[in-house]
Image (cartoon, rainbow, N blue to C red; front, side):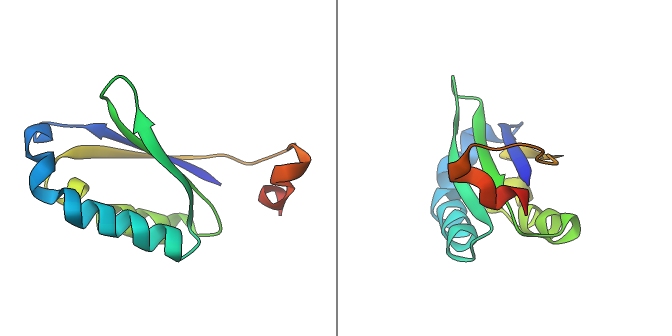
Length: 95
């Protein structure tokens, strides 16, 4: 399981230029079952994604293709989590 932090970078002011493509990229990650949760970092720091069921290399390639990453709107950081215990509702993450 991974947490992807998308923190605003030097081209933050251009986010509107790439928002439609970034949202399509998010939708694709959700549709593919790789992204489990997507949300904003507050206050106005960027975004975060909970990802699962993907190799580190494939996730890195997916993140590198985010239009916000490509155009320097955000800087991405991928954190890997090795789940050890989970609430019963999230036990699928232990597999």
